[in-house]
Length: 619
Image (cartoon, rainbow, N blue to C red):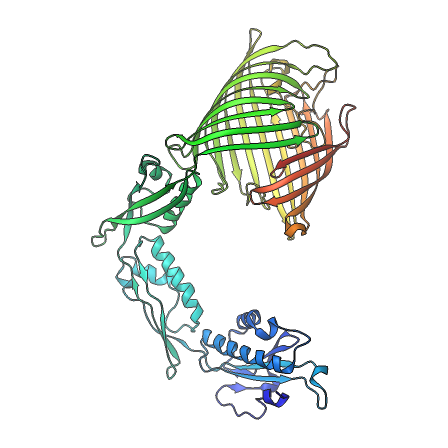
């Protein structure tokens, strides 16, 4: 091949559009590839998008190499010429021409010593328009005019064939969302008339009747009944059929964790009559999944010691969705055994009724407690599949606890018994973009728990209250700045009428890092934390993605502040500061967290450094 083989347009006589090769608009795709647009009238209206799509698909650009021979470049140029011709037809330029040339060769020079450039001049000609549009029987549907608007192509619009695919999808969505579960859309056919410079579009649509939801029918009613499945659906009998609600019910059934697969099929049970829609039953075909799980977790903190958790559960022990769980904790500072009965989707979607009974012992930096408790709660929750902007919970609790301040230096402390009963409520507003690893938005949670406590013949009343707020903001593409504030108070009874385990403390991996768990707060003459009736905490950290391990590893510097007071209004007498750095490793189920914290104003009994390992962000 020689240079002359690909120098085409210099002596061409082109008629039709007004051209100006010497003044052509030029788009440089790469060092080896240039597009020219010499057509002045009519102007080429799709230049920007056209160039971007060609650049993404170009053979010359994708195989660009300094070692290319002229023959190789010419072969690739012919492939790109075909690509450009096809792209012109996609945009409705059926009379378009592509003029290929290869330049950059100097006379007498060896082709190995020069850098050839491929140039394509695009002469698109006049752009075709849509002519007649035939959508079959779409107009016969009760919602025909509205559905026709969903197909956003009208006669006289400029022709662009790939928009037909997008508009067909929009029409299919509109049919599925307005009550047409059995609608059928044929493949589109486009007939080009070069004399009229128009394309006639035929796409047969059969609405096949409008329908409303009827009953939900389970293939395994002894396992998950149709009545229960209807309770977790976001539609009721008589509501207009929507395909999105069908998909939503499928996701909700999978989210129960009780099935391995599920198929939903609309089945007509009553045909449409005039303007009245018909009725479809939703047949749900279930495949039972594994119902029993044994789980465990291991954690460690230098100030909290080891913690091992294990549990066994049966997720459909009491049908439907009645989970029985037996759990235990063995740790340096805590031991626990408990039984939980939990009814998921109780009388409605994402509503949970829970009963819990447990016995525990705790021996931490602040107190030693032996507790037996019964608790119940009813909540509307946010979960990983359906994160809600608002969630809430109501509960009640009765417990007996035998407690004392922690024994230090072998000095015995008197134990004190408490019988405590109370109710509680929690509400959360959540605008964050993720439950486990948020990058933007905020969360605001309020907690209130009036309680009555009887100890030593004295009856006391108080209210435990707490507000938590956190905010997340992305800075660029690699950094998320996160901050949180917590404020808590216990008005009502005096401090020593409240059981040590119900008082307020700070310190630990989810509080002020660098200090021991619940080690921060007012202390008595023996240096024992006695807890408080008010608490303020604040934290800020920067989650910086490093790009290491495929972008999974992040470095997180942080700073924490906390103050605990014996009064219900904070006096900021016992202030503690902690700082450090952590690592986060992103996994498929949330970030793995390792934090190393240093106390900035430690007490003599505080360690020089504290390490925390857990799953999920600190807040």
